[in-house]
Image 1: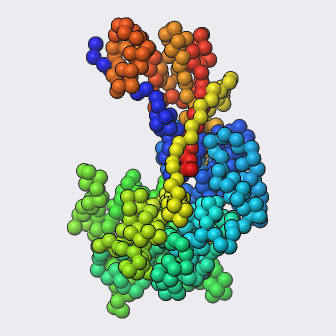
Image 2: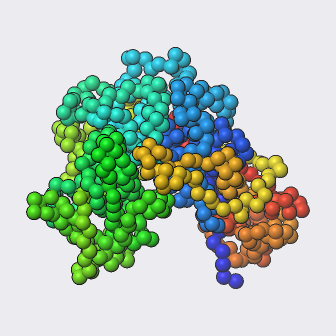
Image 3: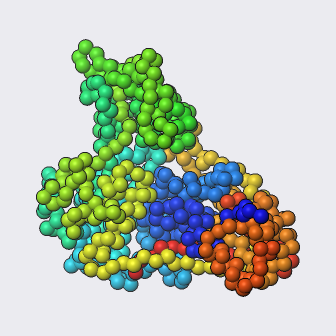
Length: 624
């Protein structure tokens, strides 16, 4: 009989890959761990698991791109678990937003360290910090690092450097810290008090932040290198890209990021009443929805009884199905009045007799990508559309500005980017490092956080001349009387409660998403399949009765002949050991399809000889 099933003998990498949410997180957050803790009502434990690897956990609970949800196995049944919203639920109770003094946050973490023992979510670095610096202060003569940029990468690097006993000083060119978190994310998505509180914890650990300090103008890169033992470049992608079309530099054409910055700093953006936003991503929706919020009467317009913005058009190359923006952004934008035009590309900016932008001419886009999924738009030259506008806002991508970098200090590539090593952290100057968008290009916030943490380890190695060895700490434990919530597989994903469109538009600081209530959070967390739990089979006990396969609701277990199996050398070695020279072609085996297992535990309950146990597997990355 020809083999029908390609099987794999589980190893550590296999078990890790089963916990898809954690495996997908750039900082290896045990999302399954905190989601399950919520389902059990242990919210403090849930917060500490979420906070363990992520110094900006409270912010991530609001705006993380959530690669964990994109990887969630539950989506293969219906829809992913609401991991980000559940993180917000626990950070709201125990994070920086729960205690404005932030002292409680640090005390909670310290408390956890004393009871963590061998838990895979331990905070070793906080433990080291507390042990070394009992007065909570890094010594004045400690090694220092100058960090250029106070966005997610810079803040994450500063956080971990403090825990390593290295003094970080962040230089921020803007009047406020947090980079694009403050200037690029609208307040209706991310409250400013929350940003300030998150930053304050990092300052309390020993980070100094100097605002209104522009490198290359107020201080040179060379001077910074002389002042500090190492320098980290962590500037974000805050420069709006332009489109190579006629009149793109005409007055009235604005960068979307520049507009968001003006709004964040309460500066007059000088916008008119009818507006066109070009772009189809989340930033384009941030721009469009922020414009919509200019509709309401402000103080000066109330006196004059004049309305502000009246019409906002969002135009993008992509079809509705192809749009990179999150579905919730598109839906909420439509509720608020954003007029969407799909499958149109900008051909030229229309200008009036004074040379000022007065609209955009678009051309019908037939396709955006070629057969290899590469960006290669095709257009119908005969199908045009004009939209009149007082202003045009471009949101088609962002770039980093490295004009402050002196080539005598650091080498740039032909494209004007930093020349970096394979890990994207080290420049050709031994004391100059990079992290975040400047190293990787525009990416998710959580990826910038991961880059900052990785850069901190590289800097530590450089300054101390000690090599940090990475290892994966694992644990297996048998679960006694394993049970899942009744009917968990039929619970549907619920949207996060939000203000009505009318309420949202009243002010920029009206937070749209209101978060889960406790009953909703418990219900939504119970949808988790708990993918760290595995069915472990004892071959010495198993009698191949087939009871487990009969009771499995997803038909993920099968009894098959050994002759139908194929695999690598590990399979052959196992069979050789198991049968020790005997003929095993006619033997039998139980195989499992992990992709459809929902961890219900019915197979373990059904087994008449106790050959199946439910065991929890945990892992974390550790450095020593």
